[in-house]
Amino acid sequence: MTPTALTAEEIERYARHIVLPEIGGAGQQKLKQARVLVVGAGGLGAPVLEYLAAAGVGTLGIVDDDVVSLSNLQRQVIHGTDTVGMLKTHSAKVAIARINPNTTVETHTFRLTADNAAALVARYDVVADGSDDFETRYAVADACSTEKRPLVHAAVGRFDGSVTVLKPFEAGKDGKLNPAYRDLFPEPPPPGLVPSCAVAGVLGALTGVVGTLQAMEAIKLITGIGEPLVGRLLLYDALAARFDTIRYKRN
Image (tube, rainbow, N blue to C red; front, side, top):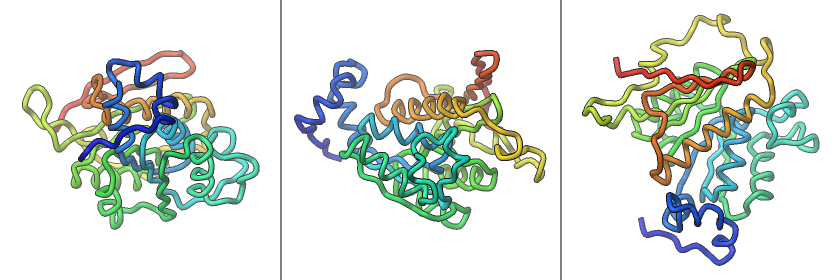
């Protein structure tokens, strides 16, 4: 793909990126050309969408079938009191236009399932999953594996969160294929074993920490900098203010 030139306005807007040798103008052009699908415009999706838009990602796809409720606002900071009752996809699109009018937003107001995931995922370069149910997580992970799209996966609960990057269609430095989501979590837990946020609760700021880490991993994948969390599960304990990393391999 031919790099798209940055306008004078974009050069000023992304000046703090461009002066980074690791990013530079070439990296910013990659961000401008990138297409990222964000699954869920909730607690995790909110900071992912905000920071990717601010970073200059050219196209953001948002898939969510829910509407904004008052109880969402404690953590889903892309929405506001004035958007309660609005579709989350539309509310997020309005917010992104305010953050960066250069970013194109594609809304997909439906529930992502095993039947429709692959066709949607194939339209994007990178996928960030912020969904809160196991059925969607497995559908997204399987679709990304099939369509050979990098997946930035994250999950939160109460005071803890986790982030990892999945590229099972590529080999690591050892020549072996990278692990897939099902190598990390072979099967979903029995229904009711893991309580939802509505039942167990979740600290709002926790989703900001973990969602921002997701955005960082997506930016690394797009620009080709650093070492993405492939084969590594980053764990965050908010109460202890501690990060731990668990390595995992293909089964």
